[in-house]
Image (cartoon, rainbow, N blue to C red; front, side, top):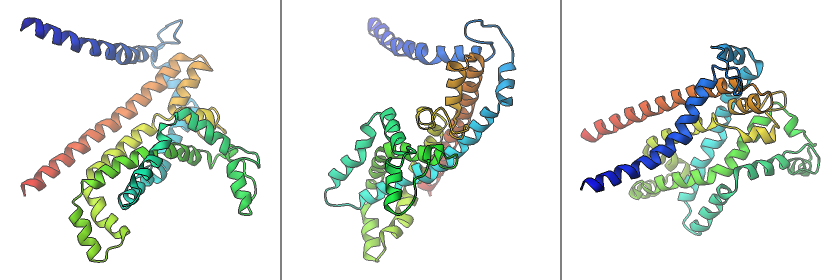
Length: 294
């Protein structure tokens, strides 16, 4: 019995050690580095790195862009999968084929998708978006050179890749709803839109809120999309994100302390949203239990 317990503890220590080595050790090292000059000299400078990034216009621009990413990801990246999942739940013929087609973009490498859309957003009149514009009588537009369009275009690329897999999550939630509620609504003459608003949305409140918060947390970690499409957060830092700024501090400016400080600010923001997410789930769980008792 003792040998079994020791063997079980040994098995548990292996993944815990790997997790600590690849997650906690870099996080602790990054925290220490945020108070140092750079990775090589390791001279402690106190809060000078944090003061420097807060005084940097690129940092304030990146923070503002983060909230723009959140806004457009809610308008595009959050609502589109909900509607796709609902429409798929209404399909009775060839539903398997539609599910495969929806999931296919999620199987493509994220960086490959970004390069694909970067080509589509080109400034040339022969690039896809401009070809479509010209087909409808419009004129070629410098999409990647537009400070107004760059963030919505990046969110569109992210949505194209991730909407299908998220829609399938919603579909599984839709299928857990009592079908008799939909049948009764159909018999009463309710349209698909009315069924969606009055039956689907109230029944999926917990799922909707959970994926909403996770969507926001993931948007804070936008990195290679503005790196490639921008490129490098351009034009004029209009697509700069906090994670990309941290990368540029480290590998272009070689200011490792400022890079680590930016990463710590990002960690703090994500921690706040994660805490809010857990409190929200706890409140919802308490509300559901009270409703069940009644």
